[in-house]
Length: 210
Image 1 (tube, rainbow, N blue to C red):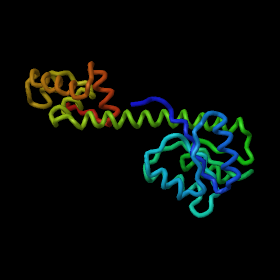
Image 2: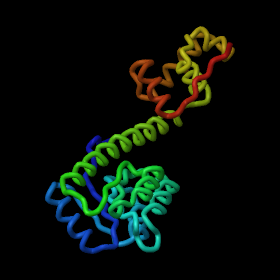
Image 3: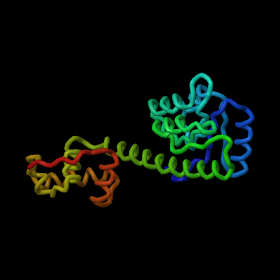
Image 4: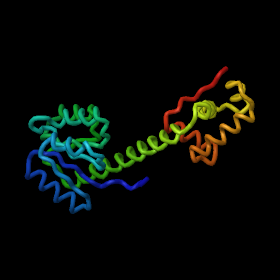
C-alpha cells in the first residue's frame, strides 16, 4: 500500500476562464489537474476511485457545490473539498463547512492563499486515505478468522489473559493458545499489541465476561 499523497487537484467550476487560470497556477506549482464544467461531470469521474482534493465552485448551475458535497458524502467518496465562494458570501461558506468542506476561499483569491489551502487539503486527504486503507486492510485480515479465533481476539482486545479467555469460552488454556497462534498468523501480527492494533482498526469490539 502506497503512503504517497496523490497530488491531483480536481477543479469544478463552470467558468472556463477560472478553470484555465487555476489549471495554469496548479500545474506551475507541480500539481496534476483535472477540470470539470459541472457537478455532474465530476460525479461521473468520481464514480471511479479518485484521490487528491477538490476545488469546488459553490454557485454551479444545476447541481450546485453544496449539493455536490452532500452527494459525495452519501456515496462514501471521501475527498477533501475547498469551496470557492463569491466575495462576502459568508452564509454559503458556513454551509459548505457544515457540509464537510475543509476550508473555503473567496473570489477573487490570492495565488499563495489558494495554493496553501490546496496543500493543506491534500495533506489531510492523504492522511484520511491512509487511515481508510489501513482500516480496510485490517478488516480483510480479521475476516479470515474463524469464529473461535475472533472470540479470542475480542477478549485479547479487552485485556483478558489466556486463562480468563479459557474460562470465558469453556475451553482449556492450551486450546486458547492454539487459537491465538492461528489468529496471530492470519493477522500477520508478530506481537499481541500488533494484533490488538489491527483489531481496533477493523472495528472489533472488546468483549469481557465478568
